[in-house]
Length: 228
Image 1 (tube, one colour):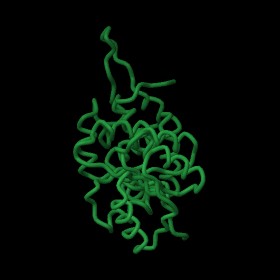
Image 2: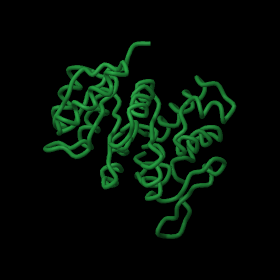
Image 3: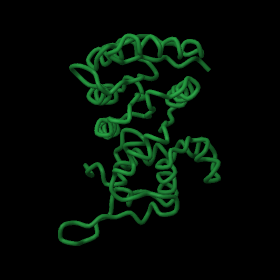
Image 4: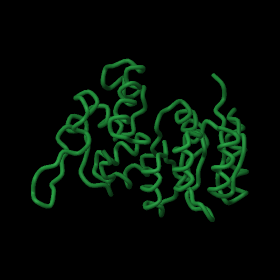
């Protein structure tokens, strides 16, 4: 398997250099850098990386807007590096289609593993980021309960959330995605093959109109309006 090709997007040169050293020492190919969101989009268009390692706070076009552009144009997957004071930006990045979120203080082994997983089409959620982000979203999705999530309209009627479009198995998969499980973990815990797990994940994203796993969870929790 070839090494993932990564584009670094951060407005601090020292941070980009540290990330480059960290990644390249573990066999990951850093194909380019960007100091702002607009440059990240341009370089993603030119270099077509597998993963864009994205800071959220940058001058001009920020990381959320850059993530949306990169995902809309199909230029690569985005792995966000965030800090403890960026919850609002994290929610924006979820809606923009980021595939994963790590804290900037993460260690090299975790970062390298996350890059490989995102490059392979999986989502990555640092447990500390997940806990804070999902706690702020309305409703809840838990294994075995995904099919019961609903909300009430102002008139008092119960309105099904978009997960009503999913099959029972797909709802189980969505619930597992909310726990941050990888495809392998999902397959093992649900007793299905990994290719089958990948197919179910793809079906869930398609039916919900979601850009990523985290976006699908946000839609199911009512954080994103149904656009159908």
